Image 1: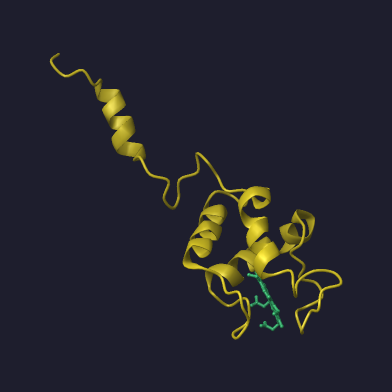
Image 2: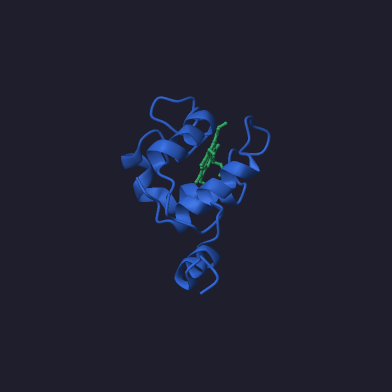
Length: 111
Ligand code: HEC
């Protein structure tokens, strides 16, 4: 064999790619590390016990994982769809944050 790269290694590299794009879960995002900072910065001014809710539903709190977990699909969907924060409120969610939440969903909403 003239080529030093074994066929199985080449397959692995081709199959897995070298980037960390959507759908890859070998380093899955977690609520604690990746998502809580988004919720803290962009959601809990309205969605937390004791917050100035400005009309935000009382059952939707995003300050802790136990609060988020039962409504995690709704939480994620509100971000990926761009529905929340409501129109006119800053700071809005960035494209990168939406992508991160999408990947969090794809990888199983890890705590
Ligand atoms: C400035 C206050 C405010 C902020 C900040 C805010 N919300 Fe809300 N949220 C509301 C209000 C008011 C409603 C009810 C009216 C509506 O549906 O827009 C609501 C409703 C919701 C709902 C239920 C309706 C739906 O669209 O599913 C979800 C889920 C939600 N918010 C998620 C979030 C998330 C996630 C964030 C952070 C990215 C966030 N909100 C930030 C005020 C806020």
